[in-house]
Length: 108
Image (cartoon, rainbow, N blue to C red; front, top):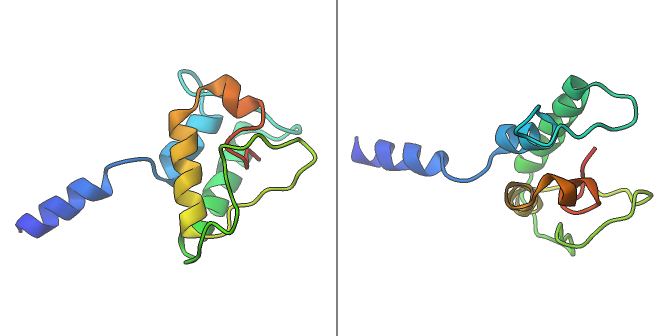
């Protein structure tokens, strides 16, 4: 029973796909970022799908660094659980203006 309590507590620590995508696309006090004529729901749904797909794939960072500013013409994807983890941390630790200006890519 104690082990389940500890695991449950650990699972709740830090960002997850839902909290990360809500931070990006959710209404205030979240960032509410808008992109390319898509609704917030469409953006949120894509974010969740991409994040959860990455979380299901083991892998390494392979040069991925969300702390490096990306241009709008660059196509950045998170492809595995390690990339998703550092991406989620970057989103959680950044203010909205930083997210809007190309940091913590991808922002769909």
